[in-house]
Length: 40
Image (cartoon, rainbow, N blue to C red; front, side, top):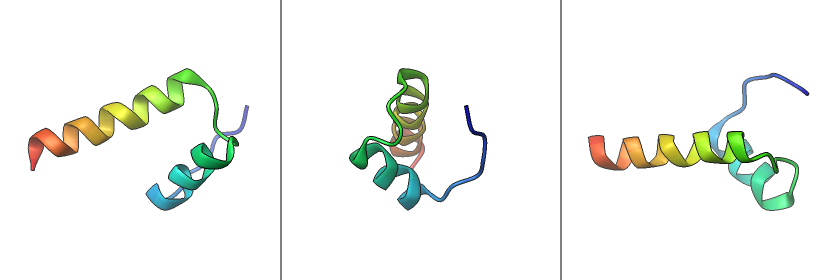
């Protein structure tokens, strides 16, 4: 497992290319997107 800070663009690209595949990371990113949508 690797821990590091990434920009939103980097995370999106990593999910698209399959570099990020674990459910916890993808779910956390989805929750962040929903939170930002509701909070706007």
